[in-house]
Image (cartoon, rainbow, N blue to C red; front, top):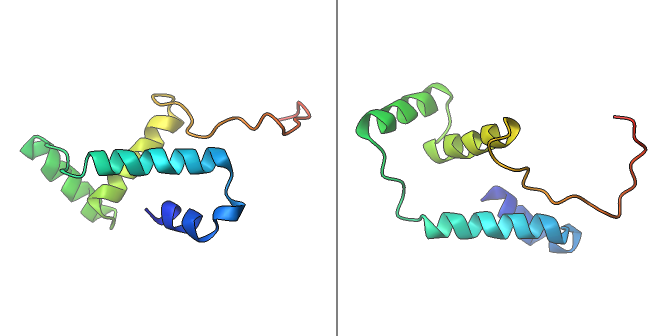
Length: 90
């Protein structure tokens, strides 16, 4: 949500691709506002893990999404900037 609020504060600086990603995430959150029904053991494990990491359970779920992207289980959420030049060194 912080990203969405920040984009709203600086909308002129946000790219179309970034706004699109943020709006899709917001729509997903709103669509799932009822929460996720988890097996009680899984819910307890997530609650314990979140407490151990000193974070809220929803933030832990967001972090798991980042892990899924980093490990190629989900596509990278940012569109490729076709106007940017690349020198081939990386």
